Amino acid sequence: MSTQSVVTAMKVLEAVSDNQPAGLSELSREVDVPKATVLRMLRTLGELGWVSQSDAQSGKWVLTNHAFAVASRGSSGSAIRDAAMGPLNALQLDTTETVHLAVPDRRFMLVLERLDTPHVLRAFLPLGSRLPMHASATGIAFLAAADDSYVDEYLSVPPDAVTPQTVVDPALLRQMIAETRARGFSINEQGLSTGISSIGVAVLGPGQKPAGSISISGPSSRIVPAKFEEYGEAAVGAAREISRALGAYSAKGY
Image (cartoon, rainbow, N blue to C red; front, top):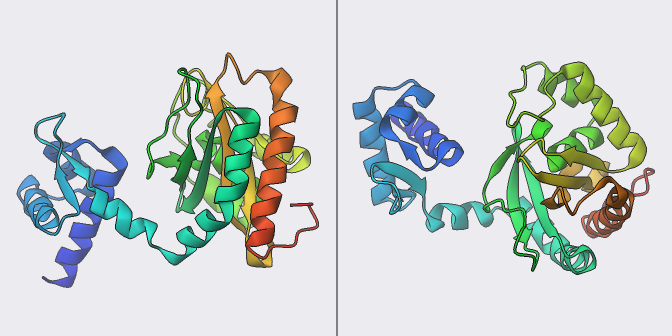
């Protein structure tokens, strides 16, 4: 396989990840490659166990468990997950809401772990979901922990709305980031999913650099403004424990 073919195959794989279940025409537009070429790449990736056709939607393609398993074996992801599991379990028991662990993936936050609430009505993000930073509590928290140059680079590309409540104005996003820095945790009211609110806190790694974020998520009918401070403090405490385990020592108190 030529270098260009490898590049195309990886672009197709990423497009499936971003849009699954994804159809051939959709993938062709996404990677700007003819459908015949995309189909050939999909068949090759299928033979290697990375993608498969969806059982639920004929003609659609999805990532396989093999793809997620390989990604999960990444050293940095494993380290942060191992450090996070204890504090996340305690946080979930304390709040009884869904908690997530996410790590950066270019302009997105990748959901690495999820601990579910016992409530029937709950927030749900599949493992491996990629969340736009500006639209998610984990992403806003990560941006708030990053330096200004990182924020400037992120906002140099116009953000897209995910829901009617998604904040996309750069000035308002900078205000949200500043408020998150001052408060210690982010608040996202229905910016990622209609009817869902979340609280997010960044996790720091060596050198006090943001390594990921955690969040508490649930229906906006339960995660009401009166709960923000309580849940924010709980999330800050959990993030501090994870950061310490990762070797971070921050003047911000993480």
